[in-house]
Image (tube, rainbow, N blue to C red; front, side):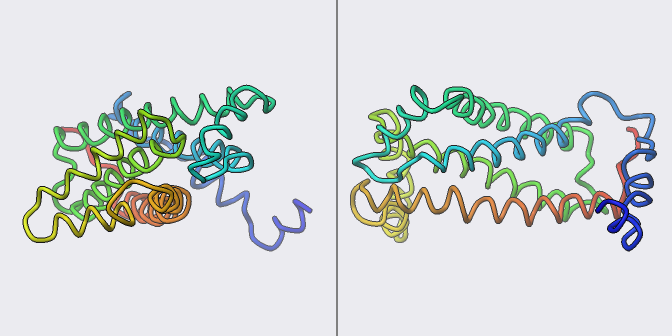
Length: 213
């Protein structure tokens, strides 16, 4: 099967050219690795998230019990949930380190402004992942955190109350809110992140890595 695909697509040549024998610029240091580390953690989040989806039930009546079931009864459920939980926290840290390095080194300047814009969008998506995912266990802590979080936009004049109702799917945090956050967390945000990571990497490959300061 490998030979069949290789003879027609020449995948080995592409991998040798772009991965195995491609040399990184000599000026890169440890802080240049955090973009790749963030991408690795995102991949881990996708895998563990899919595994959690097998048992998670997105209803106010069963969400908490399903999380407890995953943690206590499912084989390696505690590990999968732990990886997803801590992966989310670490991903926030690596994203900020990565963007801090880009900002303080001035790498966002011409001709890489568009790549900086895609990075900002990915930052917003990452924070949105955290906000929407926090409600899913449906604990007292996550419930009231969502109440506070969705109440914040209501302070905006004219449109604030409409934004709050849109986020909650009503006037209160309820089953509609949980369903809405669940859909955004597992469908909308992953699709957006995949698209913008693709654009992000494509621009890096096209423009190359910035030179030393």
